[in-house]
Length: 364
Ligand code: FAD
Image 1 (cartoon, rainbow, N blue to C red):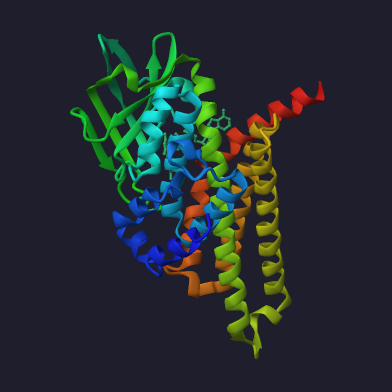
Image 2 (image 1 turned 90 degrees about the vertical axis):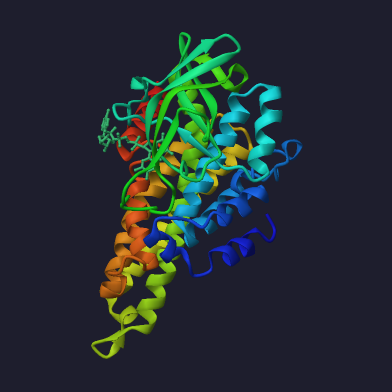
């Protein structure tokens, strides 16, 4: 990933606040990163990918997250799509779809529905076989990156279980409507998607007939890891902005940093950043070692990192005072973006339930 950070810095520049206000990324930004294979850097070289380790990709994800959480969200969707193809796709499906994702096409992953949020067993979208085709119908909500995507991986009911199906965003019967005024990650291209009898080839069906829980767990694992690292990025940006402000802003005749109660905030931010980084590094090492602890370590990383980011960003706002009370400020964005990270890829409560199950099972 040498040079990747410089490319991101050049592409983002000082424009993230404008993108957030406009609720739109310039099309060339995610596309240039996608064409360089950087939005799904763990894809192996045989499929045109960079074959990055989870640890290297994680540190890069944090860097993107420190500059722009919306762009990082698009990266999470692309990586999750690629991971889903890697995990659920046959050899020929991997050979067909992964080079598209490493070569510049953008993808989104659609699980959630109006009545299926935390409880994805309630998904009602259907993937019905019809000759050499399948017909996809349903209503998906809050799909990150759907506004930019060329391909949408739609999760739905298939035969006795579930499957993901690769649907071109321009296929007849697909309607994509941007989510109006999201509170955070505003330029991440969240959209609701209607699928009205969308016909695609049967060969586009990935992992057909698996139990829905297994399918969702496989796909979400990557999303959780990516969000966790993105939260490290939010903490980096917030900690740096808070330290800089506390060093340079004077009140009561001294820099804010010299007031001990403000110093405590800075210490808490340092701790939050370190804790989130360490827990993500541990989980990424589990991925890189193919450790059986990978799933739990990933949930733990997401839970800790999102919580630390939400608290840490709020602390940073406190340090900056009115200076952070502008929508475009990096800390104000971090505050809004971090809160959403506690809701997605398994909310705080859902992660707690998974960790509680693990605690009970490992006590046996
Ligand atoms: P609900 O499931 O209704 O939950 C509401 C509250 O109740 C939460 O606090 C939850 O933790 C709690 N709760 C629910 N069940 C339990 C329980 N059993 N025990 C304890 N507490 C519980 N979806 C996609 O498919 N693809 C995407 O790319 C995507 N991106 C998103 C991006 C953003 C910014 C947001 C906000 C959402 C996105 N989503 C996406 C949807 C997201 O996955 C859901 O919002 C999430 O799963 C939570 O579902 P919900 O919002 O319906 O909340």
